[in-house]
Length: 424
Image (cartoon, rainbow, N blue to C red; front, top):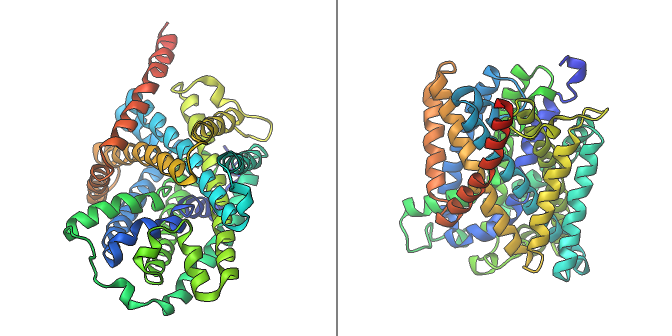
């Protein structure tokens, strides 16, 4: 594909990484981390180091294999077709599950501004579905348009988030950060528990590797965008989340449905709280737009290799993989609708559970791909990234691992049917 046919440049690729990472997690995590107090910084430290190691790993792999598909391409090239399918299937499942979670979080942010919009489970589900299909419509308009939307929404949410963290830092009450470890567990146990939580906020660091075939000068652009985007999103997220923990008492924070908005309201009044809720809505919409793009590009790459059904490989006149957008969004919609009788928090938690479990396998295999194929020097980075991924996987919990295993097994019949057709 020529440069003219590659609609995403460096800043669009960086915005895809930042926008995919900064979504719902940064605004909701302070409530989940409140019981751990300042000790949650241990989890953030481990997660950021692990994210940077993974970003460097994906950057090196993108230089070696600058094709669309990201983790799927690396698994297939390093280990063969079956591992490639398992990673592609697992990663694709994680993406449309994440889309469901982010759409639900968007509905929650809209509900903080207009309570009537999410007053019933059915309305909340309708609001989530509206956001999901609005982003699908943007992606159906073309990859270039999706990239422009991603750059626009990333600026809209990153600037207020950094400003909030930098200004609110001066209002932190040290009493809310003491004792350092308010739990009855040891610091290593706290670190493991908070790594499992903070990982959700930093998922998406590999986003630019998936549509690599649509990125200009991918061998150079993707690695730079991956590392820079991870650092920007990681530092902004840690700053904002930690500041919120220092602004509100833990007993108030742990029950908050919109902790960052509540913190802003406590500092500067209700109008500031509504403003932060609006930033959260933009943040979720931007992340959803980026993940819808990824949800179509990955099955496109797998279908071109015969690993996914062939209809995923068809492009329209604008170069958009229409089937990938429609099928992925439809599956995310089913997840939202099938759980619409639950509260927003329950649907969000259930979707995160599926997405995080399904994402860690591609991280593990991608790190192993560098070690197995000896992609360049500094292989200790891949080894450290692999150790981090396994460590995070151990902290996810038995239920999440079980669901992840069930979803992977559910996809194997598709692989064997496609392989049998090719053989016959």
